[in-house]
Image 1 (cartoon, rainbow, N blue to C red):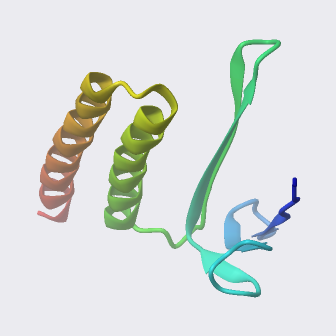
Image 2: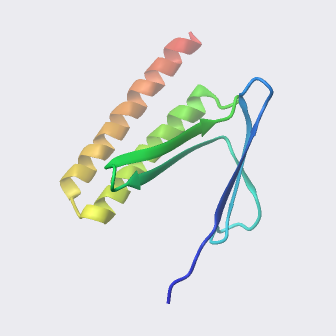
Image 3: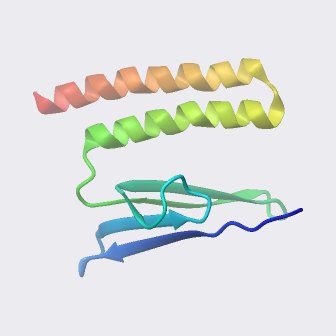
Length: 115
C-alpha cells in the first residue's frame, strides 16, 4: 500500500532579498505544524539530465559557527545515506573522515576570525 507525504517550505525574503525566515512542515514530521529553520539544503536527482537540482538557503542571522555545524552534520549524514543506498562501507568512511577534517579546519578558521 502506497502513501503520500507532503513537505511544505515557506521562505520569507526581506526587501533587499535576504532570507528572513524559513518555515517547514511535513505530514510525517515528528512535530506537527510549521517549524523554524535557519538553513536548508534540498537536492533532487534528475536522472534524465544526470544532474542534481539544488536549493541552498540560509537566513541572514545564521552564524558562521552554526553554518559550520550544519555543513558538518550534513556531511556525516550524507555518509550514512550513501551507505544505506550502496552498502559501500569504505566510501562511507571516506565521507565521514572528510566531514571530521572539515569540522577541524572550520573550527580553526572560525577561531582565527574571532581573533
